[in-house]
Amino acid sequence: MKIFKPIGHESLKLFLLLVLCLSLLVPSNLKSQDILKVSEVYDYDVGDIYQYRTNELPKGGWSWVKFSTYTITLKYYSTNNDTLFYHRDYKIQWKAYENDEWDISYNQDIIYFTNLDSLVNGGQIDSVYTDTSLFNGRQINSNVTYENRYVITKSFVKGCGLGFEYRYDTMSDYTRYNKLIYFKKGQEEWGKLLPPPVENISTVAEIYDFDIGDVFHFEEEQDSYFAEVNFWAIINTRIINKYYSPNNDTVFYERDIEKKIRSYYDTIFEFFHDTIFYTNLDSLINNGQIDSTYSIPDEYNGRQTNIRYTREGESYTTIKYSVGCGISYDHIIDPKIHWYFWTLDLVYFKKGTEEWGTPEYVSPEYIETINDKYNLQIYPNPANNFVTIESKTKIKSVSILSFQGKRIKSFTVESKNASIDISGLTSNIYILEIDFGDNLVHKKLIKE
Picture 1 (spheres, rainbow, N blue to C red):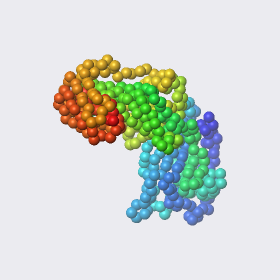
Picture 2 (cartoon, rainbow, N blue to C red; picture 1 turned 30 degrees about the vertical axis):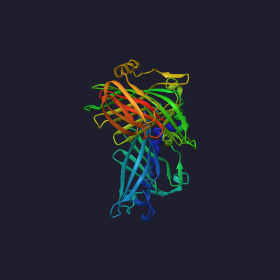
Picture 3 (tube, rainbow, N blue to C red; picture 1 turned 90 degrees about the vertical axis):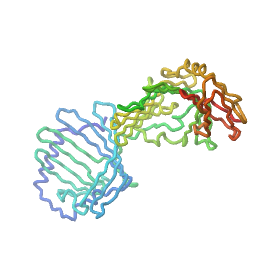
Picture 4 (tube, one colour; picture 1 turned 135 degrees about the vertical axis):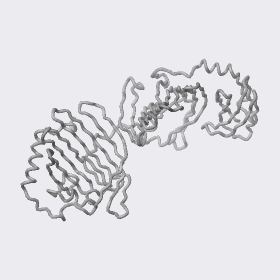
């Protein structure tokens, strides 16, 4: 691809040596008032975006390319106003020429510049010029030096910092260059952001396009050395109802959920209902913050998948959003917290007659065991004033939850049966959470 075509070693070598010779032979007539100050070169504002392309060209031909994109998020001065601080978010995209995949990372940093009234590069500037084809005609200050075995060319651009830097090793024939290829300052833009912005990003409506009867099976895992919270789980979800807000910008889904959670100590089964919703349906998923999109026949039957990589401190997150499946993969790893990681992975779905993956059922035999063990009876249901709960095993407590999972009332029972007063509840669908001590059982309750 064109954007990865390296500069020829010999051409670059001759160019740098020629520039060095000219800079040494031709006396500079520059006056100090022609040279930019540090404050002029590093005059950034919050929201400014700068992207650099870096290449290393060792002798022998192997090379790589890196794009570094910086966004200014905070700006402030020292108490005596002689030092300027900037906070930046940055994204690094790196790949070897022979590698088709980008390696992407995110981070934040703080940079600062001091002696703001002094001349840039200590006044060591060989030429001052403008070029309408470069940096929108902003003033450029350039300098060429020879340090030990290196020929170094630097250019500083007004309001943009370092415009480019070439470093050539005359002994190893090694070249490295770092060049500003794009900036956005307010409404002003120059250059082209590379790699090109991701296209065809899915919308929220496309990602969360579920239908009644859709089934999704997930595996969830959490692990960390030396921690006591490690577990593995199977989650089965079925869509049982779907409706929209009056202005159709929000979709609601009611779900039946079965979970089997296995830890080092025991296995817990949970059965419950909830309601989830997604809003701003016409907007791009994750506000358009997507690093790549792809479709693979063997993954989710070729449904388009949108990937986002993020980093906060030492924590890395990878999220996949797949059309019609929601979040199909979510992975967090933090090496500082005893190599903590957590993963949620879609392993099976059924949408209408379409199926993908291998089902991971919460054991039907266990559900029957639960029914046999407790012989749970709930009546009447629907109910108006009182609901009776009977079991052949002692019930510790009963809670009434909203369909969204909010706890409304709790009752201590410590008996095999209970009569629960629901007369104060409004007509709606609720969840009865019945605690047997060794298990929680959730049942739907309809209040008339």
